Structures are given as C-alpha cells and as structure tokens.
Image (cartoon, rainbow, N blue to C red; front, side):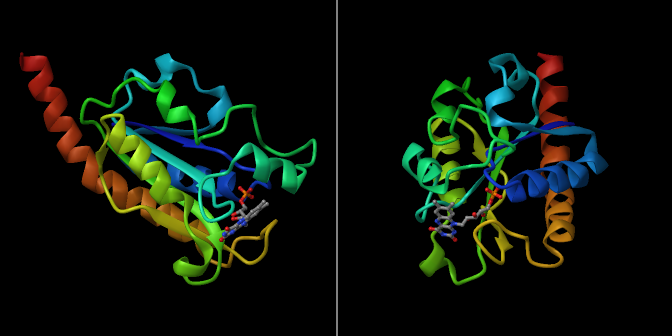
Length: 179
Ligand SMILES: Cc1cc2nc3c(=O)[nH]c(=O)nc-3n(C[C@H](O)[C@H](O)[C@H](O)COP(=O)(O)O)c2cc1C
C-alpha cells in the first residue's frame, strides 16, 4: 500500500509527528511525509491512503493571520501553501481512505479546539473516505516540545491506520485490475 502524509508545521512538532506516522505506516508498504508546499498534484494519483496534519491555531486550521502573529523563524519547516486551502487543489479522492491529525496544547479539546476536524471535513468534501477518527498529538507549550511518548503514539497510530486501510485498499485494487 502506498501512503502519503502531508503536513503543515511552524515550529517542527507537527513535522515530527508526520514523520512518526509515516514510519508506522511503513509496516504496510511505502510511506513518506511531505510538507504541503512540496506536493504536486501528480503525487496524489497513485496514493492508496492520504494522511493530513496541521498545528492547531486559534482553535482550528492555521490562517495567514496566525502565521504572521507567530512570526516564524527563517528556519521554520514551512512552505508558502496553507493546508486550509490546499484540499481545494486536490484531485477527488474517489472514495480512497484518508485520515487527519493535528498538534495542539495539552488541555481538554473544548478549550484548545482542533485543526484535525476541519481537515477531515475538507477531505470528506473532496471525495476522500474517513479511515479513522481525527487524532491529536499534544505539545507542552506553543513552540513545543511534544509531551513524552507522543512520537511513539504517533507511530502506533500510523501502524493501526495501516492495519485498517491496507486490506480494504488492496482488495479494491485487485477489483480495479479485474475490470
Ligand atoms: C498563533 C498561534 C495560535 C495557536 N492557537 C492554539 C489553539 O487555539 N489551540 C491550541 O491547542 N494550540 C494553539 N497553538 C499552539 C499550537 O498548536 C502549537 O504551536 C503547535 O501544535 C506546534 O506545532 P508546530 O511545531 O508544527 O508548529 C497556537 C500557536 C500559535 C503560534
């Protein structure tokens, strides 16, 4: 199974989570984590599973305004495109599985909000099927670090996601080849 993990990240925590998820997914085939600005439309053509993640800013997906407020350092792992608008540029998922995640502060979700839910809505709107519930990985402060054990949890989440998506996707591929 070919998986792609697409992320946006200001301070690097979401990037680390994306890489750990891609690592867990590698138990089920090829997988890579790529920053949103480096994705070409053609990268999506053969993907069996799409995973998308962002930091939570102002209770949801980052906006230009929240990036400006945060004043990212020149070394921030970012690129010009924001995930908020990116799904509009996606080819339809035509029912392929997708999942979303975010990073957010270590407080109850009703206080922090969550970017992952907005991502899930956008993916669904563009024809991607929900493979699992949106997930959050927690940081101790605005710039991080992640709380202890979150990268292991991200790796395990990627593995569990692969376990759910791989058998379904492989049988769909076999059916597609038979037509
Ligand atoms: C402008 C701004 C707004 C933020 N708003 C929220 C928020 O509403 N809820 C929350 O849990 N965390 C919030 N945070 C903390 C981010 O979620 C945290 O910086 C992020 O998870 C780190 O991910 P990154 O290292 O990939 O950028 C905010 C951070 C910034 C810079």
